[in-house]
Image 1 (cartoon, rainbow, N blue to C red):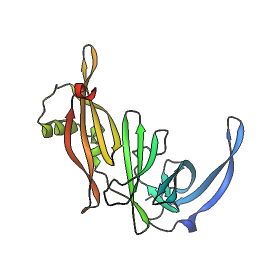
Image 2 (cartoon, helix red, strand yellow):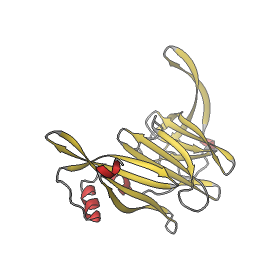
Image 3 (cartoon, helix red, strand yellow):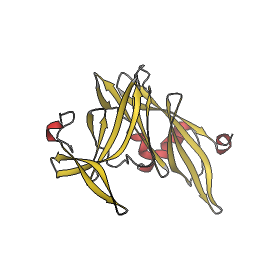
Image 4 (cartoon, rainbow, N blue to C red):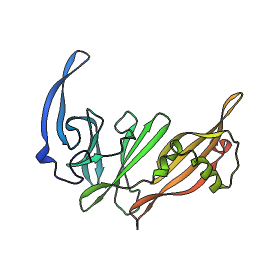
Length: 228
């Protein structure tokens, strides 16, 4: 754990300050705070991203603070939450934040959508008793880049046979009518170059009894259908 323990009051360990930095020869003020880390002693954190969402008629400030060794803290209103997924980018130019009721419980969640190159990531926070907490996303969402058997499993589920040379190149995540759709783009290398082989689409569904998200059934969309 990078910042003491999850859910603790960090204010007693905060040393807020403002300092000068130099960018293109000009000085500028930047907010900065230090956090004590059990493994790495002191790390300086600077604000890397900020936005504001309106949730239940309340303005909710969203901030991401990044340390000099790559750790991050997500600040939702006044609550500070360590971000533990160091393998996933957060706070780059491709980041979007939005308020959506993606669990179907009548309350809006905070959704972080990040696109990094040809792949996308999603992070969702729900509120319970006034505290925001991360909702679990199945690791299979990202297994296209980690598990060589991912495509084989999807094709088996679809009872679909495609060329042996087919592979997954890229992943998008979209919110449409409060549904989360994940699309995996399929390509094949041929003598004349890479050929679009369509995509596999899956819906990310919320299992309220387990308080986590699960992946729905796979749907294959051919290149011809995708162009319509």
